[in-house]
Image (cartoon, rainbow, N blue to C red; front, side, top):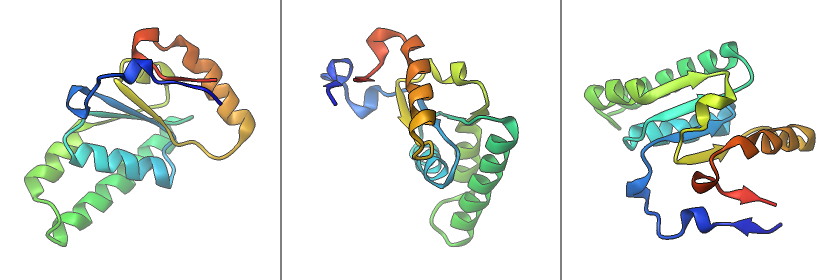
Length: 129
């Protein structure tokens, strides 16, 4: 596979204003949780509103456990929760500066997602061919 990384040339994480995570399973939840705790607004996307709502609940439970264990403060937990947006609409991810794919290892599903990703603005995307 050839990677077109020109969209990221010269970019720094400090220039990333919004992250989208596609897939709300264990990996997607973990990535989204880490990103919101690090201060990034995140759109967590999956196929249904039920899936992303369950993911939000699990992320909230995990962050709350981190508060109980002294890993984060209640204020940071509240701010992190406010940075998390959930959506069942892929188009809600199109304005992100960084889109992370975390869907199941199913070739047809991945092909479908990458076909839909051609709608991303070219100057903001990394295309895998």
